[in-house]
Length: 207
Image 1 (cartoon, one colour):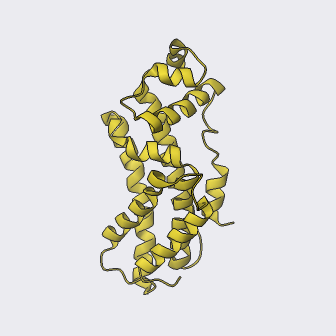
Image 2 (cartoon, rainbow, N blue to C red):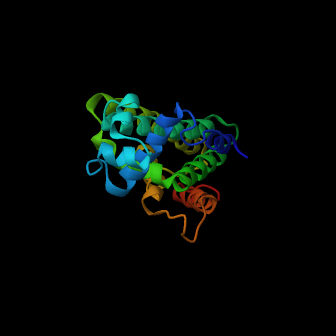
């Protein structure tokens, strides 16, 4: 198992959210936001899914937006760790890019409900929280961009526009959350392997 894959496995979803009641509320909010959208979801909806009263929710989260922020920050920090593990691993740029894309795409498939919320409800965050999450996204972008730049510099990749290619690769992986279904024909591992091969072909690398 690669360094990036270990990072993904070890960061169990919401394992760092305590106490148990707060974790249940986060999990319930993810499901509600994914099904109904942030703006159509009420705190009563979230509390009901968690088996709690609306008043109990406010013990742990002051607002619905704070819940979205907790989901977004946790999800984006996990994504950053996955990308960082691949970027810092040894090996060629080809190996690192394959590792990064395979694990990043797999995470978006395996945790497609959470990923859909953190990627597509971003604009609902307040200004300060949005700025913080945007910073995490830029750090993830820089890590992937450096891998692609390393490959272009070494001659492993044929890339004329490194920033544009980085954006295309990230967009490809993120979009997995939109269409992936656990009942579909591919497993998360198969999606990761497919996307790694597709991206290496995209950059003119060796598959």
